[in-house]
Amino acid sequence: MSKRIVSIILALILIGAGTIGYIALKPKVESTNAETATTSSTKAMVGTLPSLGELKASLGENLTDLGKVQISTVLFQDINQAILTQDNNEEIKVPLSVTNKDNQEFALSTIEYTPQNLRIGDTFGLAELDSHYYAYTYE
Image (cartoon, rainbow, N blue to C red; front, side, top):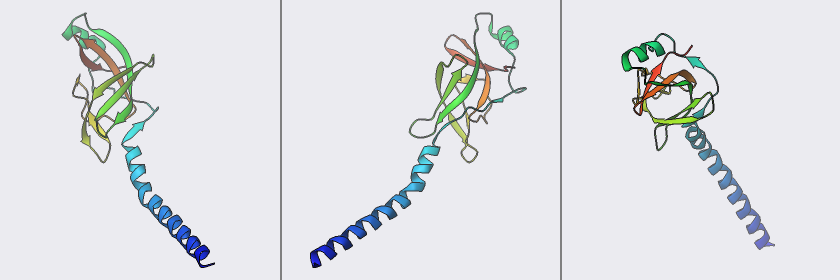
């Protein structure tokens, strides 16, 4: 009888400790998941970028228009990386620099003309010349 009571008490203690551990770790898991975000909303950046015509005038006709892209996924943990998704669902991965952690804003320094306050869901036109990317207003 006493072994049975000890076993029941031990089981209750283990269940309680597991529940407390789960509750204590739950906010950490949520904040880790917040480090990677994906969205399908769109916010076009108009007026802050040159037009495709202006880019071609300054860089030449060899500029390749990749079309509209959306910042669909951002990785803030381990590697700072943004994934840009084209209309044909092809992805382009570029490094990012966090500019405002509280507002989850960042910059894409490898893409010319992009502002310093980009957010997930922003859309813009993208062109390429000699393995360099250039952002432009896509309307």
